[in-house]
Length: 364
Image (cartoon, rainbow, N blue to C red; front, side):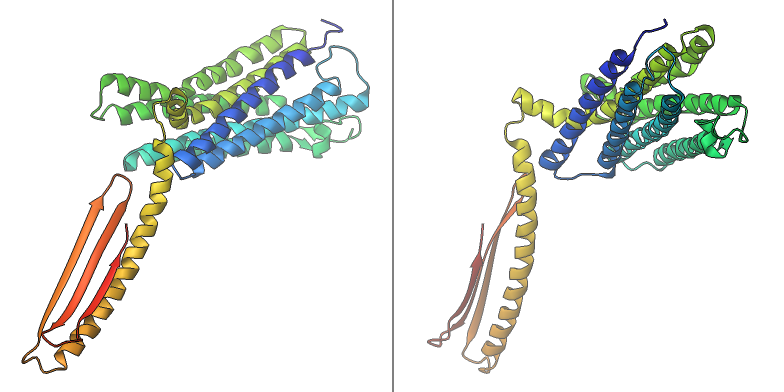
């Protein structure tokens, strides 16, 4: 309706969901760093998607401040800026949608047992999605010559543009494939988990955690089918554009959060008090295990060299009246997350006096 301002509707949805996604991503990095001691590419893709979500939120905040959410006549200078920001935000949106799918695929790849066909499917879906996204971005910025005609037609009256149906139909086809990708990424883990020899209840829980991307697929279908039809029927185009932006931000943040949910299980265990200090011990003992192995290799090499030198000294006496005894004791305690090694090496030359040599080196 003329005079209505929908900025509160747009920003009231955009910023809370973007900040909620930031909490999920922060929790994801916390779990990876302090509970698993390893951050992977799937985590960085999720973080990059979050950056794109913030870029969209900032763009739409400026969009609202310039009057893009106001159903009223605006100065032409403001209209030019609003149209430019609208097209720019589509670039952030398309990029974020693809990077979230790559993040989910990388997570599945990280969790799965080695499977060539599943890996091929995952990267094929991601490759086609990324290629189609680049094509759509190219269509958006290449549909007019010069490009500025897209947001400033008066200032470039000699410019020319394609039919808008080219970008619209390609965008709808691209969104349809993205929805298919979301569904495929949701069902691939089901095939992976169903073969595990665990309780049915746990299978169902894992499948639900890894299949939360179905919600994003549903949002993509709504955005692709319902909103364009409403835009043609409804004369309140400002409201319809605001709803289009809202569905975009909901879809992207749903994908970000769904990609983070499976990684937050350790945080859930810590919150419920079930894990105790298990995850803290895991990171510390992993480091201790590496240090112990390095020390063991170094000390073993030293013992071997000293043994050779002692044997040479013993043999130099002719070997008639001398007897050599070499005793090596190794005690290895294999614990859950580390190896503690204690070893003692004694080399003696008997019965000669003053010829006893000993090497002792132990640590726990």
